[in-house]
Length: 436
Ligand SMILES: Cc1cc2nc3c(=O)[nH]c(=O)nc-3n(C[C@H](O)[C@H](O)[C@H](O)COP(=O)(O)OP(=O)(O)OC[C@H]3O[C@@H](n4cnc5c(N)ncnc54)[C@H](O)[C@@H]3O)c2cc1C
Image (cartoon, rainbow, N blue to C red; front, side):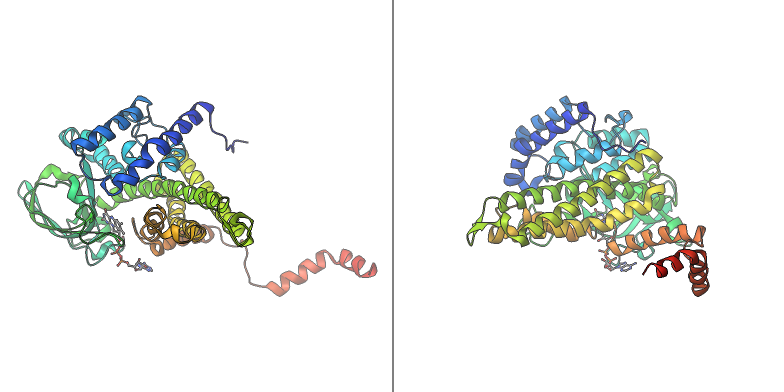
């Protein structure tokens, strides 16, 4: 019987250290430099941030999503899940621990498909936390349907030429390079006709037209607006910019997004736990109409429902992390990752919403992190594909199992089946009647 929910004491020690470190040293950064996490560090900020990163390295906890061949610890997804629960509490924590999206997924792509020179030039600085990267797939006319993508990559002698528009390329304005998906063969299906390219952001023709901000961000705050609308205007690239072969973009993207989606969910467990901590703290410290909030039944319902929802979600996330470690193949757990992806915004929304409610006016103030946490719910319903699309993946996979093994609960001949069951137990049915 191998199902086990315990954590090895040595690893628990690491988690305990992380927990204290994130609370005491990193969460204060969110209160002072909340929007700066993906900006290149100023000399002043470097004095604050670099020593924190060094402490993480000294503890052997830097970039733990990576295997040892890339300088990580190779802990696997289950341990990473427990770590990400802690890192999810803070916007800065993934940066300080070298596990921030989208850089994690982009690093994986270059590690697998980049040339030695690309690894030297882009992967190493990315892994060392010296540069940022961006993933450029969504287009203005459609994100969730890749068959609508029109950005074109055409071969011209030794070069590739990119032409088209991309939308919501996060962090492009501070990134050293972009990973761009483009149609290299329009004559076959989008799933076979798209390729992936590594594009240094300073290449001629990469034109960031606008940096779109998120709701709640000021239109006039220069640090806000991290999601670029980009015109790839006849961008000329050397042949080796192609990552992983012509027509391979979709297969590569699925590997990258599979990991990315489950990592978002792991961090979401941390956000939800933080919201629940705050809810309980408030319930036990606020009096109204003669009693603590904790004694009001509605508030008890909020606490109980949030705890139950979080436990369900957390166990599912840990289970999927375990499955990935077990199978070493994201494709085998695609439907479970998709199911987690559907749950993520819902659980996040419900728990944070209740926490806000229990905090009253303070909950919606800009002195509390709840507003930012709450906004993550709709974002989680969109990034890496909208929930509706993932529901389709789940349903298709689940139905496939029944198609493969029909007859589990057929509804034909029901009256005959009921009659046969009655016949089988006729003796006992008669006894029951006799005993009445
Ligand atoms: C904060 C943030 C950061 C992002 N960062 C990046 C990034 O770095 N790089 C990148 O390439 N993209 C990024 N995106 C874009 C994201 O991947 C897209 O928003 C997402 O894929 C949906 O595409 P869309 O916005 O064009 O919505 P659309 O494709 O227009 O879909 C709109 C809505 O239509 C409905 N819908 C769509 N398809 C179906 C369906 N099959 N069945 C039923 N209903 C459906 C859903 O309600 C969906 O939300 C980011 C988005 C956000 C919000």
